[in-house]
Each structure stands twice: as C-alpha cells, then as structure tokens.
Length: 305
Image (cartoon, rainbow, N blue to C red; front, top):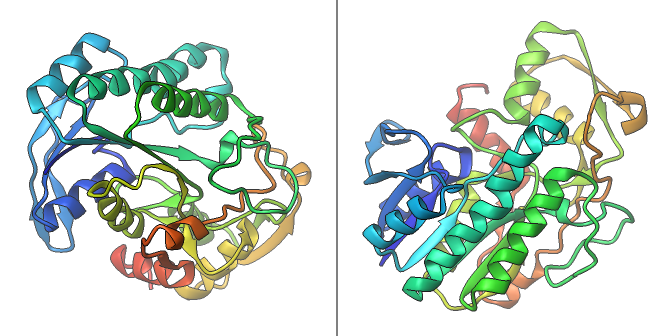
C-alpha cells in the first residue's frame, strides 16, 4: 500500500509518515516547502520520499497525485492559526488552504479511485452545551473563521468521495512544532504565575498516539466520520496546565480564569470541545491511551521531566 501524507512538516503529518514507515507501509510526504530533511523517531532518523505540493494549486495537486499514484491520501495540511484566521488579510488564504485545497485533493483522489482521510476539528460545532459531540452530529455552527473553513473542507470531501474518513480531533500536541504544552513550559520558566481558562472543556490529543490510530484506520474500508482524542475524561485548559507543571516538577502557580476574564483571543473559542469517541471501539479500533500517560511520554521526549 502507498500513502501520500500532506502537511508532513507539521506536528501530525510528521508522526503519521513516521508511523507508516515503521509499519513497512510505503509513505510519501508532501508539504509546500521545496525540501524536507526527514523525520526523527527517537535517536533513529527515518527518511521517506518527499514531493513538494502546494495544495492551493489545483494543477500541481493533480500532477503530484498522478505521479505518486497513492492508494490513499491522509490530508494533515491545514491553516491552524485560529486567531490569525480572523484577520481580513488572511481570510482568502485560510479558505484557499482549508477548503479549496482540500477539494483539490479530494478531486485528485477521485480520479484514482483512492481513499482519503481528512483531519478535521471540534471547531465545526457551535461549542455550546455540555454533551459530547457525536461523530455523526450535523449540528454545525462554527464560532470562528477557522472552523468555517474546516467545515467547508469536510463538505468538500464528503461531497466528492465515497471512500473517505473524516477524523475530528482537538487540543493537539506533538514533537514537530509549537503547541500548548511547549508554550506553558516556556511561560512557566519565566513567570511565577500564569492565568489559564477553566471554562473551555475537552481532551488533549498526542499526535504520536493519533498517528497509530490513523495508520490502523487507513488500511480498512470502515469509512465515515470519527472523533479521536486521548482517553482519560474531559478537562479544562486550567486542569491541563496544572498537570503539565506537576509532571514537569515546576512550582509555577496556575490561576483559573473565565474566557471572558482572559480576553486575549481574536477568535471565539468553544466552551464545549467534548468529543464522543465511542465509535472507535464500535468499529473495532483501539482508543488512544490516557492523556496523562501521553503527557508523561511527551515530556520525556522533550527532556522536561
């Protein structure tokens, strides 16, 4: 089997290519950069073929997909800077990447009669209430422009293809790039006290664990919508920060505040990012490990325990 992975320079794409390579599945990474040096798995470098691909260029996407001839595409590339997506000067680019770029890939995949996996987000929902969102819920009402464009991406995939997976995730962290954990560690080293919101509820997702699930899924024909985060229950960003500092052995004080009190975000954030992941078990997939365990492993990887 051959799998083309977009966004290989990002947190998730990095780990997905690595996981596929470890399983002996032929993986080809792609991103907008001219070259990509490879991927790291602990102390061992794992290299994979790489193809530059600007997903907003329909002709380039079609050419690369025809050249690679993948059996499946795992589409991890996305604009993920949520606040910057609100800026008027960025909106056209955000849509070009998250919506139009996704449609370009879906149409190229259709030509090959291949399968596609699209990585989406809880931001497609309205973020209200306390009940976990189910994978098949269609009560869409994104709170911000990022969520709007990711929903358009979902629709592009589901309208274009029959053989597709749409996997919604939340609160992502991984080795290859910036994330909340790295930010909190850096802030905690320079500040005695940090303010963190306690009214946004969800569950973290470690890209290393998620990559293993996606690799399990892509070799099947169990198509449809899924939700995937680590297990361990629902927490706030405040709870997450407290556990980060506890495991890292830091004594930085964490002060809980409401989203309104925090007041620094351009984009509206969902208070309810709870995702119902029971469909994974129902369909025979192994759920991700507990988020505290994932955090422990991640901190060891970056030398912060």
